[in-house]
Image (cartoon, rainbow, N blue to C red; front, side):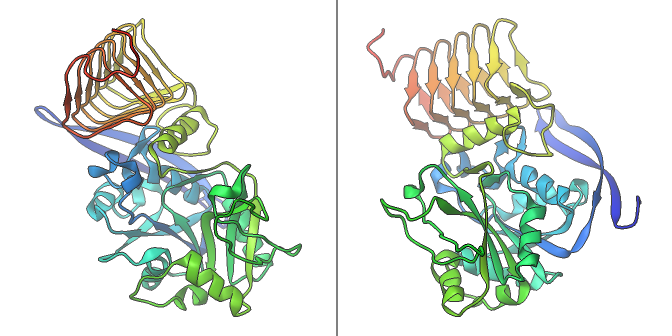
Length: 392
């Protein structure tokens, strides 16, 4: 233990994975000192099916997708831990067992994790209410489990306390708010309205998917039914005169709900543009996990990640992409801003750009897979079958 109010924590993270012939176990040792606080719980909503990210999420829940070398949720937990929040409640549903199998009780990650499984979809508000019985503190900070953010968590918690707020929303300024609902605030920071998407938004502030709740307000959300926090809970609180405030900033923010955003977010984590305490190596042009092999005349750049046992043959380029464990990248392949699933094979000379290749897919030589193409798991594409150009 360090000074009063501070805690030095160390531990071992055991990462076990199967290989032909048995198990391989990797051990990561970590140690850090942080001021721990018991007045706030963290709630992370990770129950969604991630349909916009298919086929990647056919085999994994969205927050468990390898992102800059580790499951995305591990990056978020590192930020929660760095803010001194020790108790985390995960609201799970789809592939719930994958969270417990990987994170366990949270001790290896410096937090104490409780799990609540949502048997039927309850909406955002219903999912938040569903975890109420696991809360310990009078304040809960709630995260959507697919948002990558640079928000200073201590600052938003301080704002919530200073305002004596019932709910504080993180609002982020974006260059173009037309694709989002906008949330105007007054000079005192109080939220004035929750507005739907419009071609003429009155503000550049949008709901960033992170909320601080007074526990009693969270418990007032109706239990056991579908509730939209955006369309029912927050407007209802405004109508009742509750103290709803917006913590506005221009920090890094990205919704990882689409393949393009997922790939970009992973690259931003690798290069250090997006904050994290969970990179499995130093920030830079690439993360290459143990067992991966890259030919000397090939390049892995732009914040790319190569998973374990990936093979990149000669004269290939992997740029700003995520290649999952065990994939095989052939001679002269070009992969740009794309995701390649586990144990997929990309044949010589193929171009993959702004595309998703599913697990175990076999893409033959000399194909062009571009412009948002998604190849489902286990699909075989013969050599030279898909072209976006007239080149032979």
